[in-house]
Amino acid sequence: MKLRSVCLALPLALLLAAAHADEVAKPSWQQRRAEFATLLEGVHKGDAVARKRLDEVLGGLEARQMQRTPIENMEIMGVYYLPREGVEKALPRIVAHATLGWYDTLRFSSAPGRSEIFYVLFQLPFLIASPDANANAKAIDFFNAHPRKTEELVRQGIAMARQFRGQAVYDRHWPGTFGANELVCAQGGPCEAAKSLPESQWEEAWQQAERVVRECYRGNESQASD
Image (cartoon, rainbow, N blue to C red):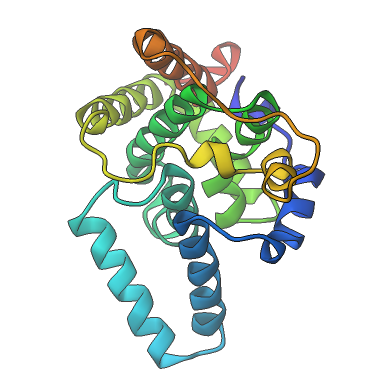
């Protein structure tokens, strides 16, 4: 899966899940996401208190890396870091969060949940940074124009993820509460429950996560000019 081939709109199921999210109790990571969304709304309205709180959130992210879930961090990358730093500087951190996020997903999710996360996680910062897909296009252009540089940045991001693989303190089971299927489960409806991968298969899951991330963030080799 290359970034260009991923759909440029959030899945309908995810939008429906978000629309009804208040109907069930939220895990702590979803509460933080809701609080962050409210915070951004305040910043956009010129609220000085919200601006100060956003600075605190960003400062905490720098001081205490990997204390939020990868999906939260990918949103923050899209809201703040990617627009300000650009693809080249932001990519290693995006890759690190994507690797950890997909690793979690392979270990602690349902099949429907994995499908939703697959179509959201990897492109989320680019969609948020520019909802009209310009950031997505800029990323693809960078990958195509600088394939070797992109490969090196991806390598740096995966190395960063390896450092935090056993150290991150966020809720690793977050994929089990993400998406429409999981919302139905929380409401007591018919659904496919999230399953935990046996620990004996975790190393294989990590290797698969690295492979998927390398395939996702790369250029079209036929257009390579680096």
